Length: 319
Image (cartoon, rainbow, N blue to C red; front, side, top):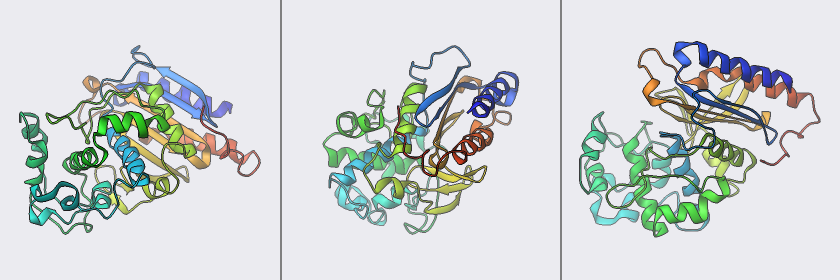
């Protein structure tokens, strides 16, 4: 395992030295259920909530959706019309939970959607529902923050309160029920971003997904299957609020947020890697997401697994 530890140390050194990675606040690595490397690069604390895990929040929503599906509260073929009723304009009513989870609901959007939304004292869902239908549902991938908040609104309705259901039912399985989760004026936790978890809570989250503890049987396969093959902005396959791809020839599954927030899980290598980033250190045009730099860690963990008995790296539970 020494080569994995060395690869983590080398990446931490690069994050300290290279301007393009200097926004990276923390780097944590777990292998076979054990934390093997932990770097607090800005001195903010590995057990303190990160200021904002950004779009990793979407993978929390996926976790909650998995339990709501398991509990019979929602079906993948439930439509926005089924869940939110007549408030949904006719052209938007056919988009399903599956379409929302896979970012294929077909809604139009623009860069100022959330600028307008944050200025509203109420009615965020109705504002989002006013977006026109640009494509038939299920035909085009578009990374869609608005659809994620509509999914949160729908889950809020069917669970009787998304925040309580997440904390009491869904997220304890994923080791992150202590999430700090801001809500809209109607009390719906943001579906698109904004949640806060510590780097170590994110490591527990990734490990729980790796071992299958985070979500009911069957849902992880659905969430980690690429339903669309190549989606912007990072041009990987997209599952159910997880990016799906390969590094060093090994399948990886990535929860990713702006400014360096990342949970990478490689079950075949028994590996989970977490990075968090300081948003005030991010520089457009200079900074780059650290998930691009994790292939040496995946390769080292994979080599270690290949040196052991077949299957032995998959059977160890999360710590």
